[in-house]
Amino acid sequence: MDPVLVVGAGPVGLAAAAFLAHAGTPVRIIDANAAPTTLSKALVLWRHSLLTLAPLIPPSYWHSIASTTLDQRWLLGDFKYEVDAAINAAHKPQHKCEGSLQPGTLFMNPTDVGLMGLIPLGNRDGQLRVVWNADAHCPGEPTIEDFQQLLTAHTRQQIRLTEPVWLSEFKINERQVQSYVHHNGRVLLAGDAAHIHSPAGGLGMNTGLQDAANLAWKLSLVAAGEAAAGSKLLDTYQEERHPVGAHVIRMSGRLLRANALRSPFVRFVRKWVLRALVAVPSLAAKMVSALTGDEICYSRCTLAAAAAAAAAGGAAVRTRQPATAAERQVWGCCKPAVAGRAGVGVLVRPDGIVAAVGGPDEVNGWLKKHVVPSSDAAACS
Ligand SMILES: Cc1cc2nc3c(=O)[nH]c(=O)nc-3n(C[C@H](O)[C@H](O)[C@H](O)COP(=O)(O)OP(=O)(O)OC[C@H]3O[C@@H](n4cnc5c(N)ncnc54)[C@H](O)[C@@H]3O)c2cc1C
Image (cartoon, rainbow, N blue to C red; front, side):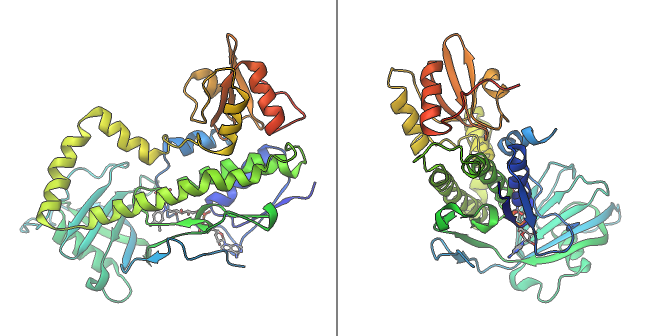
């Protein structure tokens, strides 16, 4: 079999290559850079992406849809730092940015010189990331002094930045390609190559990793010539993942804009109303699952519709995330597998999505007809 060529060894390309290799498909990876970077943009890995990755642990296609470059200038600084009791001693900051800087916490603070975020990185050196929507407030190349001034003036943290590890500047683009599948499935786009948006919510890499997981098992079957004739498996990648990308662009854009608004009314809502809302467990769970990707389901897509038709005997079928331990057990199989129990077959795809629920024969029949004609799905070890 010819290898699949993965272009770009970022997190999404590497994940796609690993998923493909895991499924036995030969892979070749190339990257424009000669060596791996030592810097990291993405910090947040949401639950669904972690579960999706679990099995691995042992010409321009841009179109003008949803294409925006926000007129904002963002600065990023990763620093080594120390606590210095002398800082802020005689100073009364305009806004608070309180709390201990524990890894896993994030402080967002709209100030009169732009939105600022503090993110303890929790890496070996205990670095602190500062992101700042500085716009015109900090012209020129950012320096450690600019960031120190910002922290001293706008937080109650007694932080002295001691050494910059990475100083950078970025603009936020919001855009998505029209099609993830080109040249009859010979060129496929995933990750930032397919959709790009603000870092708010920590969704970019997570969405890309899930693209990779969704694509790899389909591509493996197609490359091996094992996909059911006429199943158009690769087209289901576009059908399932394009709407997710569009949704993520909207959601991260809204999060960014909501955090940047500075009117007293919005500040009041953000501080008190939102705080009250997240105290309601069901609402908090809803907000969290919107970010984590737990809500993603492809129940209106072709594969689910085919499953529904096959299971017309009456069993409920919808494509969703695995819900039971038995369903989760078959995650990571290279081909769709059935978690059977007492006469019920649950077909779990390699990307962790439950594709079909019904009688085991029914589910197997559907699998053979629509996905892999040659093999029975079986609970894999
Ligand atoms: C400040 C910041 C913070 C972020 N935080 C988070 C976060 O917490 N969580 C999250 O999920 N996302 C986050 N993101 C987004 C995340 O970094 C990206 O979504 C993610 O890196 C995309 O991965 P990728 O592999 O698609 O692309 P990239 O990481 O951009 O990798 C692409 C690779 O392809 C190579 N390449 C490009 N063009 C070519 C070519 N023509 N030929 C060969 N090689 C090529 C590049 O050299 C690079 O190695 C953040 C982004 C920023 C800017």
